[in-house]
Image (cartoon, rainbow, N blue to C red; front, side, top):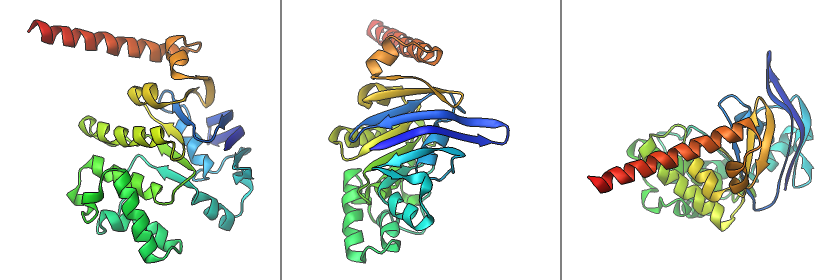
Length: 257
């Protein structure tokens, strides 16, 4: 499905991605994790060339994305959904109009685009909000519109760049529920950049840990977080143990009270 080989990207003196290679299989949910600035977002942005790699190859369905001219790249991008940190919705348009806009602009007949947009909104639980404008929705609902916009193309690959990063903690769960449902039904292959440990533990087929532009460890969540080999993996294990410990203390305190 997706094969990244020897990817390298440098910004000035900063090496953001350093000789990274990664394979993602069809139907797989792979989660990229690591400290801020380790190259996670840069990596997934090179896949559809929102960021141009300095060198390396990226094969998607047997096609070398790095070698495509603009017209062919636009065609391939329609097969790759991308959900950003920020919602990037047009404030004067309704949820339905925001979702169908890209379809119409790419040549899909208006009625067909409208039907695809309605179905995408249904998948994210917003069928009753299709006529609401962004200002009339919560941040979580706006992000779900952004997800629906990506889903409307029925993509083979979904890229997620920290989709909950711009949300208040109380709104994070509603977006994670949508992501978990999509992963569960295997509607598309998913490559997710996130700091959400609960999502990674419950949904990921594979965790890929990055540090300083390189992959330092990868494997099933149970292996990576239970018996980590890397320093980053050990830090995540300690964080999980701390959260479990403090959660147990909180529950015990409530029982005593």
